[in-house]
Length: 281
View 1 (cartoon, rainbow, N blue to C red):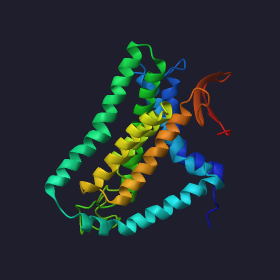
View 2: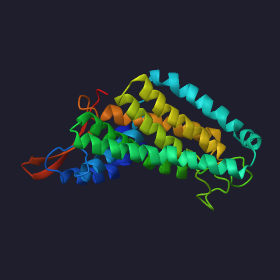
View 3: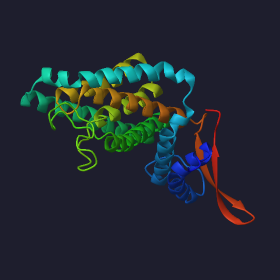
View 4: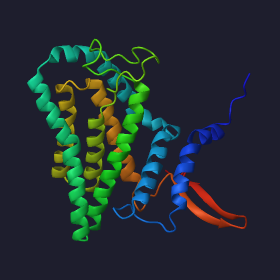
């Protein structure tokens, strides 16, 4: 019988490769900097820290989190059960599908990326640090969402409505033909909801929330209308995108800092790397 690893040790083994990669990048930075177009290394470091924190977030689950985790799990299960019926009822309409495909592409990528770029430029030119920060955080959240989405797609391995028998089978042929599909979660939904949460969190006026969350909702619905995803794919993508946006918004605040932080240090034995964890979060 193989003895089980100590929880902290096994957790460290799981994240060790990412710690090394992120630590090596931090070692190249002699002084703390903000993520910007002129310090892309810092942006990469932030993304690495984000992904590490997101992946290990399950170890910080609290009993109070069950108040939304349980309903989300039930809703996802119900949506999966309804998926095939919803797609059959939707039917096939090439013109409609093309129209909503265009809408979802524009809403999930063109608009958020353009808004982020314009916000960054305007913020820099007008010395509006808050607008510039919002653009940086929104861009960071979208990159985080894209990376997480790709990883989940390969793990879940679900066929989309245009594959197989249009029932959204998971791992339909086992490992033989993996990957067979990348339907869950919806990248479009995850990306736009991450963007929307950051913008709505930074500028929390009713009008701003109505615009960005309206955009996110439109994209989510469009992905189903375009027959690119099942309802449950969009639900999962939207939820994860919203959470990613909230994570970036919270952990990039100057007042609160990060779960994990890395910094080069000098010791009697030479240069080293300090890894810190904030248990207060």
